[in-house]
Amino acid sequence: MAHVLIVEARFYEHLNDLLLAGARAAIEAAGHSHETLTVPGALEVPGAIALADESGDYDAFVALGVVIRGQTYHFEIVCNESARGIMDLTLSGLAIGNGILTVENEAQALARADKDQLDKGGGAAAAALAMMDLRARFVS
Image 1 (cartoon, helix red, strand yellow):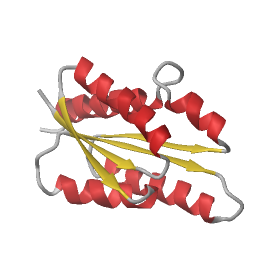
Image 2 (spheres, one colour):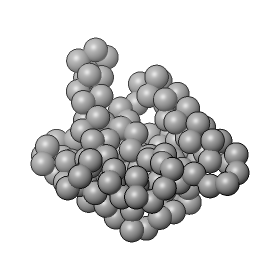
Image 3 (spheres, rainbow, N blue to C red):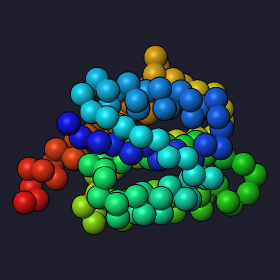
Image 4 (cartoon, rainbow, N blue to C red):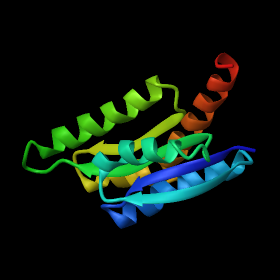
């Protein structure tokens, strides 16, 4: 049984609740345990994963959050840098599923977060578990 850390940027609580429900359901359905860690925003997710990995307590990580386009360039920075940070950690060997939604509006976020619709939280958890399995296969 694997132990998975879900790291959530809890900026939009109602949307994160949906993402969390999907991620938790997917992890539990696969027979694994999980914990949830909350950080202020999407930019903090990769750093929190890197710090948590130092503990050696987790086999995989799920990154969750919602970034909705605003009227400034900040949206681009948050989306690009959080994704880059997660990808850097993935390339260093961590098993991470990226479920940080980057959307134009709340309607898009709702459709993607709801586990009865696109279930991106569940998809991110499934991706983390798949990467964990690949790491076990290729890394001795």
